[in-house]
Image (cartoon, rainbow, N blue to C red; front, side, top):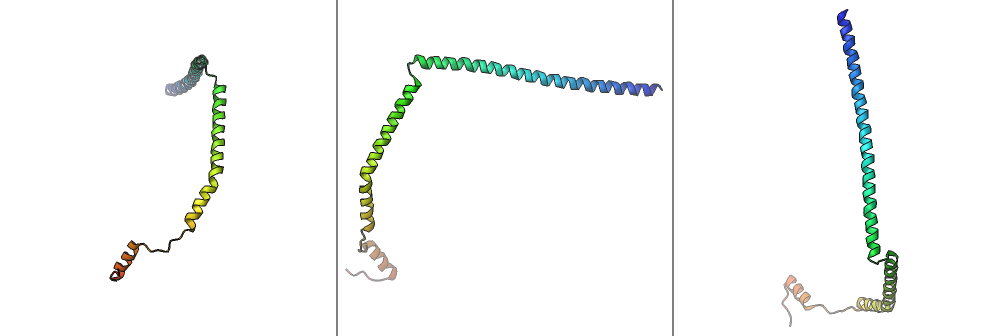
Length: 127
């Protein structure tokens, strides 16, 4: 009977060891989660400090982002208006040039083409 008791003790010890390992894993997971939360808090605090420094520096340089943005928008709109006016004034000229080039048909055969054709068919040049 002593071997049966020994086996039961080993089984109980194994069960207890499994419980200890499981508790350790759970504890490790909890510690990792806590460390992650603490690290994120540090990161957020550091990011906040740096953002505050940046904002203070931007304000100390005298530049208000709203004025610069509005000025840039006004310049962009003026440039767009100028480009549209140039387009309107030059559109008809461009159409006229394209039509003149499309409608001009030269009926003369280039001399190089004449020579190439004569050479191809073995005809003596007539000059």
